Image: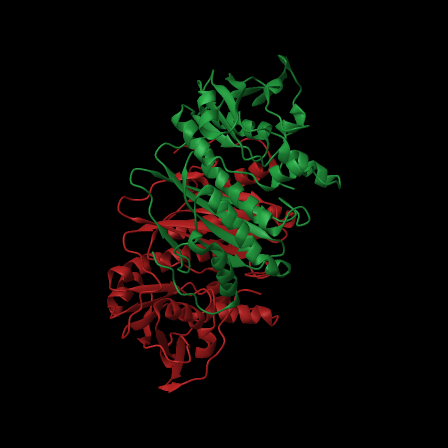
Length: 312
Length: 312
């Protein structure tokens, strides 16, 4: 597909700014819709994910480039959760006047994420807005999707990476402090675990979800979808430096993966991907009180805690 | 694909409200991403389109149900512009607190549009927002897409329907009046011309665009994409009651189609679809001043006028 000449107008000036930053990382822009092909025999995987100023981030915390990188990766993480390979993204950009000067930097941040995830922009939409709104639709494909309803009794529950960094950064900002450089970096530069998810699907995982709301809340989603209970052993959690297990289970926007499998070859995964994989719990029978996730510390069950909630 | 049990949380309560309104008009909701299949041999067509309060509509003008219907149809119109059949939509809903009570009505409006376009919701995303934001990604497929860059020298330019109704309604609201019932209805209840576009593609059309910015502005986009000039004969425009030709060419959000073809069987189209199809101009060589669309009235060329611009 060749690029299409854009007509006149201010919206198109912003699109031209973005296209200049994206170069070959944008394709087929300028028609009413993107045209693309799904590999024969594969399912299309499609997900919408929106990052909104004052809800998901504050301008004071990050650069525009980091904000856009992070929003793009957050969206791409839904492809990882399904073990899908990206086909491209659509960007619905709500750009307030006060952010107009940052359009180029926003383009660069999206481009950084496209590079890491090895994908491209296929189209989008620009409107005005009161708050910066980065709405993505991510498109991917897979022959064998991982879903959140595949957890089975007796499965082991694994998580990738170390948990708690984004929560530590957020907690620092919310109390008026600067986060540690490492926590800030972990918040600003998440990586959608796409290649890792495909490895895990091939290696025997049968359910997955990405951690956007926190290990506890997302394990609840997986437990509800699968009709099971998930028991997490807090002393086994892979912790970000200086973070407690209870902070780690409510740390959102990790974009690490929770996967369930009868068994996974942890050392082969870690050698192949360079990423930590840790068994942190087990899939059990549901219990009468309906709680989907139970927490244990050194074998002793803890009282329920509230997960991190996005909607404010 | 079976529905997935949703976990706890306020975002999920809103999703449950929407799902209750949609019933069988929603499918596969609740996983990290939607899974769907594109018919073998067809291209995937994907487009993002966002309607934002205070930019595309005001709450005082329409009911929440009408606002949601209109936003859904506006998005689906991009599939019509490509002559694609819908596979489904993703809804990225930005819901301010002040609109929480209207979530059910918004669901009904989306559902009304799904019924008219014979498609379903495949997934989405809900966040808070300062202004009601209805972000849609529409997914469709076609073996033979119509694009905006297909106009060829000597083609006739056609439009569907009658133009000027939405512009008349908008003008009335902006000057503080109530629009006529017919103009209000035309603004509130657009119909994406999906079946009509597929008819036109089969009947010989080789370029198409939907009228969202106004006939003049969208013809400019088509002319720029095709590297041609489009000459419109204003005395031939099919006018909405009480509207002048110059009002009709800048009336946006019509969601009628502009198509170019060597020739189309107008009476067969009108018999088959019940919709007006009118030859309104011709595709000509570009001219040195670079103007993509020239307007004539009874054979006499008019000075350029400004098109309707969304971005404010």
